[in-house]
Length: 634
Image 1: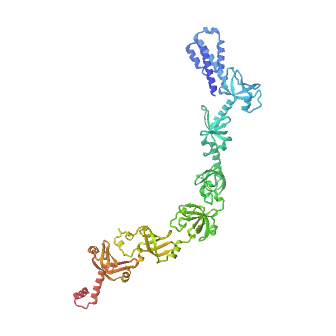
Image 2: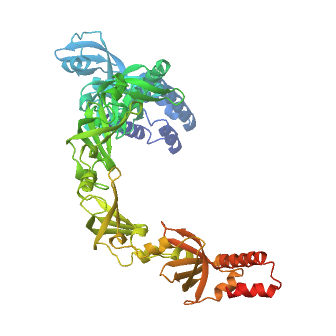
Image 3: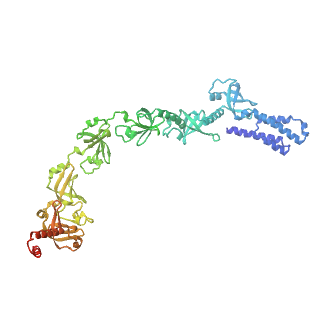
C-alpha cells in the first residue's frame, strides 16, 4: 500500500512538471485555473493531452488570447473526464485481469491499460492454489503501479487477496458475521490470529468467557471469531472469540432455562472453584455446587474432588426462574448414609471406635465409618477442665467414643471420649471419703468462694459460709457497702491450706470443702439453748443506720433491725452507742444460717400486754396504784 502511494505521488509530480513546461508562455491566470484541474491525473491522461496540444492548428495562435484560453479549458476538461471514466474501475486498485499469454514461467495479464502486466506462474499457483493455469483465465490482481520504468503496470495477487479480505472483514464488522481464523502465537496482551492471510489481534480478555491461564490448546487450531474493531490507517484489526461464545451461550441458556426443573440430573463442566463451592456450566448457565453438597464425607476444599474443566454429573436442587439461579448437588446422587438405620447402628450409651479427622476450637470430629462423622465437644474430650483440643487428640488418632445423642435428620451424632475413661472423681472419692482432711493449693478466689487445686485435674471449692464460724450481720446492717472479701482477706492464690471434705458429686465432678469444720463451732451450744420469745440481755457491739448488733452475755452475736428498736425507731436508734446494755425479745432463730433476730419493740409490746393481763387478773384490788406498784417491782 505504501509503495503504491509513493508511486502515485511521483507520477503526480512528473505530470505537474510537464504541464508547467507546456503552459509557461500562457497567461498566469490561465495557468492557475489549469493547475486546479490537474491534481490526480495519471500518465495516460498526460500523454493524450500532449497529443491534443500538438495537433492544434498553428493558426489558432493568432486568435485572441481570451478565445484560446476558453477553448483550451473546455477541450481539456472533456478529455480529462473521459480519462477518469475509463479508469474509474481501476481506482479501487483491485481489478479482474485476463491471462492473454504464458511464456515459460511468465504469465501476461491484461488489466485494461495500454500495457499488460507480468506475474510469475509459480507465484500464481502458490497463492491461488490452482495448478491448472491457462490462457483466458481471470485473476483478481492489485495494481501497485500503473507504469514501471518499462511502461508496464506492476501487479500483485497477494495484495489483491489482502484487499479483498479487508473488505470482507469490514462487511463482517458491520454485519457482525462470524469468521474463521487460526490463533498462531502469543503476543503482548493477547494473541495473533491469521484470517486467511491477514493478521489480526486477539486481546487476552476476548479469548474466552473467563480468563484462562493456559491457552496452548487453542494455538494452531481453527476457531470462530467476530471482528470488533478495524483501523485501515494503522492496518489494525481486533477480533473476539468471546463474543462468539457469548452468543452460543445465550442461545444455549434460553434452551436450558426452558427445560430445567428441580430434581433433574444433568451434566456440566467445572468452570470455577472457590472456597465455598464450585461453579458448573450446565449449558450457558452457571450453577453453584456448594461444598456441603459435594460429598457425604467431610472435605476441606472442593479442589479435593474436582478441577476446572472436569465433566461432572449433578442434580438440580433449587431453580429460581426469575433470577436464573441454580443450586446443584453431587452427593444427592448417592444414597444418604444418614437414614433412619443410623440410630439403630449407633445406639446411645454404646461405645465404638473412630478416627479423628478434624480438630476445631470447640472440639473434634471423629469418623465412625465412611461419610459418618460424630462431634466430640471440648467438654467431652477429657476430664481436664476446659481442655485445649489439640493437646488432647491429633488428626489420625484412633479413639474410643461413647454415643451421647443421635439425630439422623440433622446428620448429627454427639460423642464423648472422656466417658470411655475412668472418672477421676470416683477414684478420688474412694481414696478420700467425706469427712477426711486433705491438703491443697488455692487456685483462685471468687466472690462466692475459694477454689482449691487438689490434683492435676480436680479442684475443690470452699463456700463463703464454710470459711469461718464467725457470725456476721454485715450484709443486713450495710447492704449498699457490703463486701464479702472480709472472709477471704487472709487468703491468696498458691497458698497451701488444709480443709475437710464435705461432699463429693462424682457425676458433676464437684468436691465441696470446708475450713471452719477443722475446729468446733464456738456458738453451737448457744444456738441450741436460745429459743424464740426468750427475753435476753446483751451489749451493743455495732451501730449502723440499719440497726444494732448485740452480743449476748453468752457471747452469741444477734441482730436488732431498725424497725425493731422501738415505737419511734429513728429517735431511739440515735440514742444507742457501742457498749450500751439492752434488753430484747428473741423473734427468730435460724440455726442453718446462724442468725438470731431480737426486737426491743416486741419486748415493749409484750410488757404492756402482761400489765393489762395483770390488771384483769387483779381486778379485786381497790387501788390502781397498788397494782402498778406490784408490776413495776416485778
